Length: 164
Image (cartoon, rainbow, N blue to C red):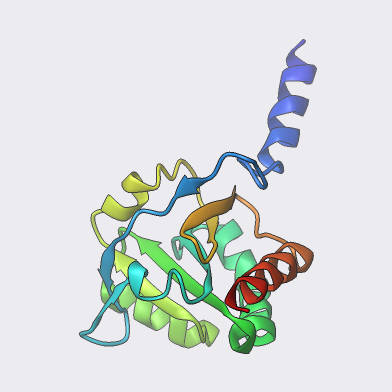
């Protein structure tokens, strides 16, 4: 019984919290400071114009660090096709995060959630946690993994069809 329980825990850790569903949840707007400037970012400034990938993370999380190359690849591949990546660092200092993003050459938006208030609004229960928000403000993906390219392309295509 113990082996079965451990197996189920391992398997469930690789399954998205929900990836595609007929029941959509709306995004929750927030404003957060950028790491690299004194400006702030407001989520509602991009929702409705782009497909948004929210990435909740920390510098000390090995799984978060392991995701960075894939996030950079998604950014390079889809930034001009309507994907906006917003990486939300939870509870770390601006200087620590700034040094980290400079050393990893992170090109996408990085904002701070110093008291984890945004993470609490989104009910983040582990990191990394990723959300995809469509043009209508619906959360269409949530997972501890990143959505694959096929999912991104399908949702970018839906957004482009809505513009026509």
